[in-house]
Length: 270
Figure 1 (cartoon, rainbow, N blue to C red):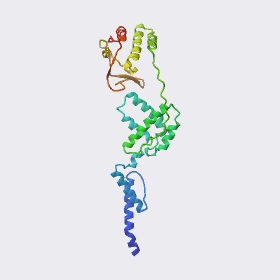
Figure 2: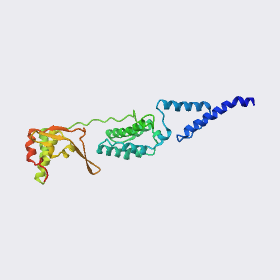
Figure 3: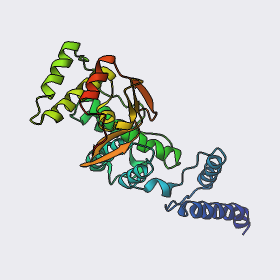
Figure 4: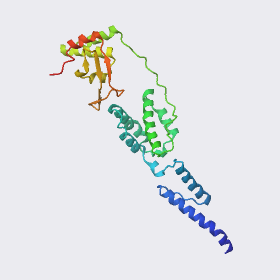
């Protein structure tokens, strides 16, 4: 009896700590039985410390599959241009879902990400773009306290060589414009010629020229006002702001003023 009395406090404390540890762990949708008192104490101290340092990870939140989390991430990208969001969605569907779709967030390791990236037989720029999208998905999981760190950070990527830029000479630009003017309908051909010269001499992007409106062409002041751009997304034209998200004014060379006036480009459609 004396021996039993001597061991009773330890037995009670061990049972209490183990029960508490199991209860805490099971509320996180896991099952963990701690047989030793020291393990129970360490577990509880660790949980409390992580909560106080704001590093606590609820295990139940790390079990979400990558495919489901990627969709949540995509839904939050409302600030992106439709064309950029469409490219991100395409990468998630074709590359991320295919490899990681059924994998829980907590099971994605740095080594596995490196192996995956190294196995992609694509252009270096494409591989880097895929990695960027996946890293953004994982970074949101870190900020949402679903995983402690981003497994895509520090992955070695292939070097993307910058292609040599090709610039047309003034003579080559005029020859290209003349070729564009050989459209079966002469009036339309002259408009194409003017468009090519505006692209070349004013430095507008294709989407900016396509979205340019007559009211934003000021031939007297020789200014183009660029405030919007248009692009094709999934077979539909989508209108938005320029790439810089800011309106700007672009000077028109004197040599183009007469051409624009004569080509009927600056007349409202009837």
